[in-house]
Length: 478
Image (cartoon, rainbow, N blue to C red; front, side):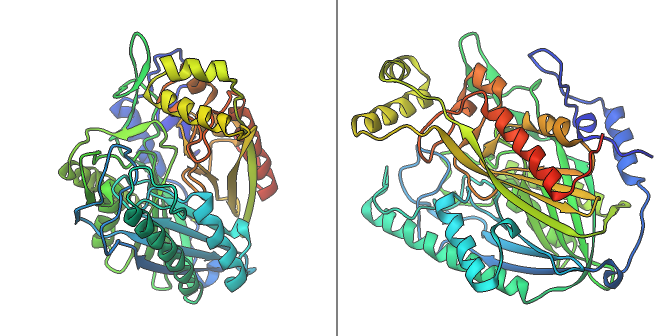
């Protein structure tokens, strides 16, 4: 039975006019899930597969109150720990000794300032090249702020700023040690993968007569796929599970001052509970314009986590597609063009823009007064990992809106494809050309250096993914 392209089973319609309708009927979803469960399988033992996998996990829960990341209106450190937070490493090694390390973490995101020193230390201590390292964050909004600059305080007190920097440096140490431990624990393994579906992601770009606001758009584009990678040991039992979902971890809101892994943390705990001893890891997809629905409480976060985990566990018990062959990892930076704005344009934005646009314009005007040159582009990291011809993993950086899923499918083919975002550098939003034209929160662009992407950023990013996929050895798949 042929494998169904991603755009078919999450209901993506590329040519439909706005407002978009991307929902499947129940019957279509059932047909798809049956198809996913009946792929032909070529079995192999862990020894025969040639793969080795190393695993490690570390608790990164703050031990003292810190400012939480994700909502600008919070004005004090967290007051309790509801869930422990973890960073986890998964090392792949093929039969030729080619290696790749995936690191996932219950955090808002790794910026380049935090991620690149980690990668450099791993190069020095473990001989890992940049293309062999991926740092993905679940993008929780109930975890500690990461920053290495004590002078960038915002609402921070001087003590809060010092504590944030100290935690960030400690976290870097933990991640480096985590990878070293995983590299020392390489064991024979078999890899297989499949895809399921969870329904709580909701497009959040709500259209009003005058603007696009953060809200609820039931007819908007979402990616409800749940990619699942199963890693078995020599006994045929699972050692690790890597799974993904394209939805913000924002079930909890700005009035919550607790440390929590939100739905992604709950899902990982539930999967690990179903398979004792398994390392469960979550990887965020293209969630830039998707929120959980409903949202607003810890109980709801637990419910979403259970929904996701139960689907992961269901997929794990189906006939999965084995992953064979060698591993090829490639990495590059896409220089996404940034809009150039003069003082008159910034003045207008500061006067009549939405709240986010006004804040951006005020900051850019202050930089203009100080003689700071506007950036012409941003070097967004991109990674493509090719697992034989059975799986292509695309690792985008930033908060990527979901429209890039069908765009990348169209560029490199929809089959044997896993698309992830929030990797290596969470510097801001990457809007599609349509989102740039429509405006709204996701068009805000870069928040680490202040700037708005042009509509041409879409083409630059997709073309770079196409180039890297070809470089990694992905064959055209239609």
